[in-house]
Image 1 (cartoon, protein in one colour):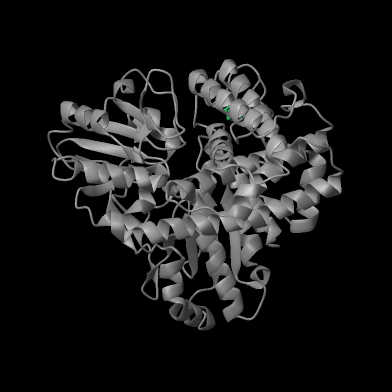
Image 2 (image 1 turned 135 degrees about the vertical axis):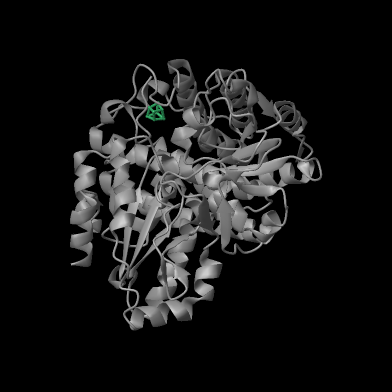
Length: 517
Ligand code: SF4
């Protein structure tokens, strides 16, 4: 096996014996075979509009190979068969040779892999929009263009231009998902979320798929079962059409990498709708359920039939376990029991005048977007310290699950607005971009001239597509950590530093000093 797609890759170079994430070699090899088959499908469909089934398989196939999604050779093999069948009906073409997948000149390999990993991330976003009935033809077609291009030879300049083109397409995809979510569930509003778990049966929903959460809320209504979000599902509390359910009670636990500790012997059921699933421990394996593209051998998978899912096995398990006998006080990383979310672009731009006045009056000196994925490395304490040490006249915008490092901290308010504002899931990077563009228009300057710095943490492939979007928009001076991706060769990194001034993080004190001058 060879895999270097995520931040925790072995030795910062690549997993070759077994994945640090728990992915076994046979699963990794099957995922490679799936990617090669998807290149074949792109080749077969390239000169014509891809069929509906080809689009669905492309999204599902790429999403399946994202880190911490699928650990099951059986479901991957089934997908490979379906992709090959679709390829035949599209006119047939050669799959990409599996032996060539991870072998090329190091710069070409770096650029080619960056495109593939970005496409994997975008597939997750397009898939979430797709299940809500929203598609964009240009985005759909670009998956085929991108996977076709992945299988061809290009010069370095051509690869770089493909990556920039991809970044702009991913912006469209995030916009599509934003529209899908807000049209289905309303514009997010600020919401206070408790981390205390009430006594009695409960289900914890993890991942990003709001439709799964909605269906589960409907099916548990009036049954005496409480529902809690976990990880990237936290921003669900901000959506009016989800928060209206009184049994959507709060948030369980912190970010994904703590699940093996936090789920241990818990008397509740867990549902994984997307990444980030870790191999479950025996003490709680019987109560973990998967759905959508998530799959793990031996776990019960909830399938869809006629656009609906039947969550009865999850509900029955929660009833059988019964929950805690008394309310259980769980806390965030820093001991807090209250989290805020719901500061999407609708809310932040709704108070834009207030924000602009506060900047003009000097009450707000700088904005930081401290966002991205969380992970297990100790170096990630950087983000907690960065927020703790940020001066009182600065605002922290945040998104994705890296915020669990600091979202239970009370660092005060500026002009009635909390200093930490959670904009949502990782795909809500779209919200941050909208806010940045609106501020730049209000101040009649470029985004790079705003008192705004992006301090990002990355872990998996959705962070790759977001980074490419930010670069394609010409956003410079991004701080990135906790380490530089293994798939960036030295030359590619040099280009990113020269062209965009991408800066690896150092220490919170040094970086704050550098940014604030
Ligand atoms: Fe290794 Fe990450 Fe790949 Fe898992 S997803 S095998 S940890 S590089």
